[in-house]
Image (spheres, rainbow, N blue to C red):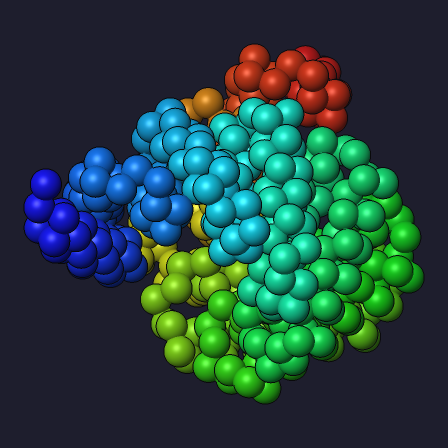
Length: 457
């Protein structure tokens, strides 16, 4: 037996794997998912060759698990969901083999936790909530085993915080509100432990901000308004600490904008209009800072449009009609910028339609009837475009119906009776179609029935 030759082959295989893995990581970053998938598969084959020579090498097993985990991530991006699930499960089995050989290795426990966490995210996306919850819980246990061996590892603490955060979001979705609240709080405590060890880690500060933000949304939903307001403020503080370390971080700036927006919505609900207006303005500033760095970011353009739309609605409450009109127009421009990049993005189209309808209602209130009519018509055209892309979308059908009613009311005001009746009938048709898709919507059913009775009379 040529031991030296086998060792040389093993070293070559390790080097081969590292090369493929680096290429795979780069290709994922560049969104060359098919290339990344191929690189990961080559990496796994190289590790299997290495394990044929030294089957009890826990380091090689660990690295094979990492390659499988990366492959699962790529498959999930490619919407190969069953393949991704199978690959994540295989990576977990490989880590367990490695841990049987090295039961006190915190790195392998951490990696197992990551695979379980990614599996949980995939299962949640597939609405397999029970299995997703189990995966997150197993992930947290793996991190806790790692932390028992390396209690001052801030990266493992951060990973545990992320799994707790994802579990909290899942529990909130399942209306397990008490469990969600305690899980968010545990997530925040975990991030604080990590920050005691690494106080200038911007990623952990950002993650802490996201957990506070999610907790704020949950508390607002539970009408715990005072605590929700405090949670949003804590979230913003965490983002500001992160931005003091990384002022050009687009993701953190966007998150800060979202928290200010949520705080503005809460303050509006509490009729603290002046403070709400300031919050919306802070939100818009954060988005504009982010867009100065990433002008083609569709998500941030959409978020900016949403906050401007909310600001417009608030300024109507304050009877600041000129500023309200300006806010709606800026909102529509933000959506248009996003749509030049992704013309058929249904969420952005729907938001644009909503903003046009809001502008129409404002102009109607100001008796600027022709401009109002144009805004309503543009809104309806947007909804018609959405329905060519997603004809069975009840939300869009409802929005279209509401806009058609508003347009009909305007035309009635202008003594354009035939046009008004035609639009009311079109609204009736939109509501009827929506109820075929969502028959339990009592609000739309009542609206449809009232409109039918009005037309009959």
